Length: 144
Image (cartoon, rainbow, N blue to C red; front, side):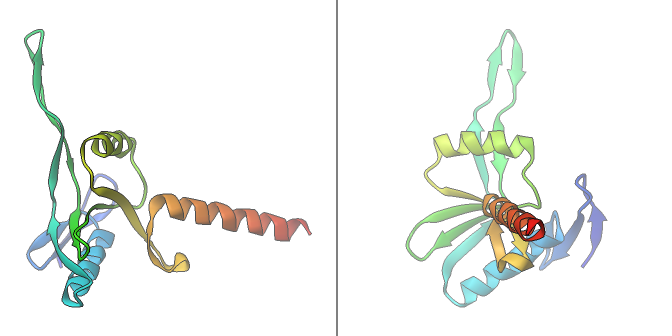
């Protein structure tokens, strides 16, 4: 596995001839391969692109299209499609792109991360809630 740094201080990882932006993204790729072998999912695609807004011209200036390039597109056995981005945190840009995606596409868009304490792969929003609850419980136990 070859490694190089990215702008968010993660290390790019090469695995099975694919380059992933982070170790956690490569781990999720391994998880999807396992799920596909076990027939828990039909198949998955890497780096699917979704056009969120087409390019346009205004006052002679060309405005480029806006795209979401997700990490994975997972095709489930029930026919549903889940678009997955694997991140340690949500960027402001992703928040805006999520809104545009939700308006235009019927697929589920998941922002996943890995948390050992929370049992493995978890939606980032659920992780934030779990951490908040743990912090609250800790504060209550300290105050008694």
